[in-house]
Amino acid sequence: MKINLVAIQRCLLGLALLALPVAAVTTDKAYSSALAQQLEVTGYAREMPPGAVMGAAYVSLRDLSGSARVLAQVELPAHPQASVAMHTTAEVEGVSRMRPLENITLPGNGTVEMRPGATHLMVRGVALKAGESLPLRLVFADGSMHELVLPIRGMQERADTRKPAAEHSDHQHHSHHHGE
Ligand SMILES: [Cu+2]
Figure 1 (tube, rainbow, N blue to C red):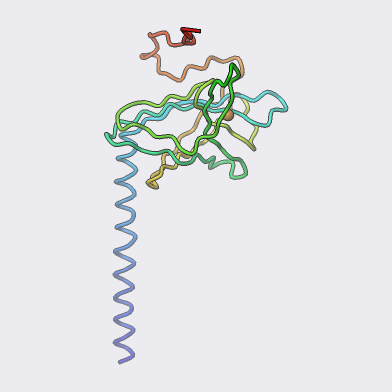
Figure 2 (cartoon, protein in one colour):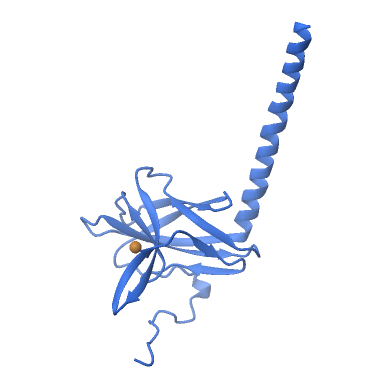
């Protein structure tokens, strides 16, 4: 009886070892490749002036999945001691103030573009130096993740995150406020 029991346990264990990891890996791979195809992320981090405590990074998230996706958290895999907060900037009585965002919802078919003076990532705990790079991990509310490496641009370098092909339209100027 004891031998049989061990045999059964081994058998069950073997099945479990075979079945579980294979299933998990297949799911993960399928999931992440689907995510990679439907989500395109570009961006950059900005070099910090000497002595600055916080730095900023801007990403453009293009989501073509057809269903909304919620960006819940941004991590820095290469700098576990550092942290990233999602911020937006709003003008309150003529003064622009940053406000933390709990998450950022990506429409299923569209682009969320961060830029200075609007939505941005606030990096704390790592010195951002021009020419270096900053690995980012985007964690979505459904548990999926997307990793990318941002270049760190110098303080004087231009801020355009768009690809050359999409650079024709001039969206650089600030919108004017009417009716004041
Ligand atoms: Cu901020």
